[in-house]
Amino acid sequence: MSRKVYMDYSATTYVKPEVLDEMLPYFTETYGNPSSFYSLSRETKKAIDLSRDRVSKALKCEPNEVFFTGGGSEADNWAIKGAAFANRKKGNHIITTKIEHHAVLHTCEYLEHQGFDVTYLDVDSEGFISIEDLKSAITDKTILVTIMFANNEIGTIQPIQEIGSICREHKILFHTDAVQAIGNIDIDVKELNVDMLSLSAHKFYGPKGIGALYIRKGVKIDNLIHGGAQERARRAGTENIPGIVGLGKAIELAVANMEERNKRVRNLRDKLVEGLLKIPYSKLNGPTGEKRLPGNANICFKFTEGESILLSLDFEGICASSGSACTSGSLDPSHVLLAIGLPHEIAHGSLRLTLGEGNTEEDVEYVIQTLPPIIQRLRDMSPLWEDFLKGEKK
Image (tube, rainbow, N blue to C red):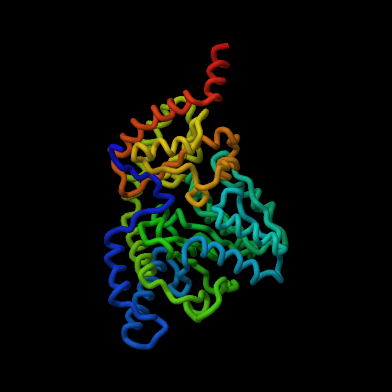
């Protein structure tokens, strides 16, 4: 292995040194339980308040609309289950899409077993929903629309403001999974007409195991976790003080100089895509331009298999994925790639490379030089490639 190149920033990020520095005292020095009354506890309470303020500034909402959770998946579960059960007397219909993260899809499947009806909207070849399909799906029983801000596999950024306006017009709650959006897109929850928004610190250079849910003031949802009176009696459990502190610092850094930082990452991504698409029979999955996350490159290579590509890249020191990290143990092709119309055999040959702040031009060049011979070697071993070549010669 000659070097190490990390290109899986959509799966997780490293913790920035500034973030870790702020977290460390809350492990060993300022460790009081915020629910207690002595001075040591008042310090941790102040730390939580500061982080809540930082999140509210990033989302342009009020601090009392921010609730800390154990991560993005918990936030998604809370928003969807909480809204569904709290509004069951009004209706039992939920609208989502076929390309959501499994934290949303599996939650919706669970609710179907609880008597709720769920509409899973189709997407086009670039991963966008149809606004007309959304309007047509709304019924007098619809109580919630949950559509992700930006897709974790192909980078598609949905028209969130337009979706939010439609939901507001019909008096339907709107939740968006913004786990991939923080630090990549400027977010104003008021302008976007969002009622609930989920985020997770480890996607923007914060610690794992901590997230947050924005709940617009006046929105009533059931609690997901019961117990103590933490988080204003909305989310029980002794607070993860170091994690909350890390999330607050990380989101503050994520929104600072975002445009300049993303321009650099986007330029690296474009150079990477341009180089890899020179490989014969390759195709970029998802949209181009401003409607795609700046660091996302998802490319399929016909007549190959994604897991073999990943193993070969790992041997060369390159960290990548073939889809969501949450489904990396599955042998099934990506549900996102199937939803945009790719056949199984092509979806199986997909590679997701997601770039971040730690990447350099040298990293990009290394991947561009390393991947073509890997693809060719795997094709030479593939009976599909052999059959294709025979067909070409006829």
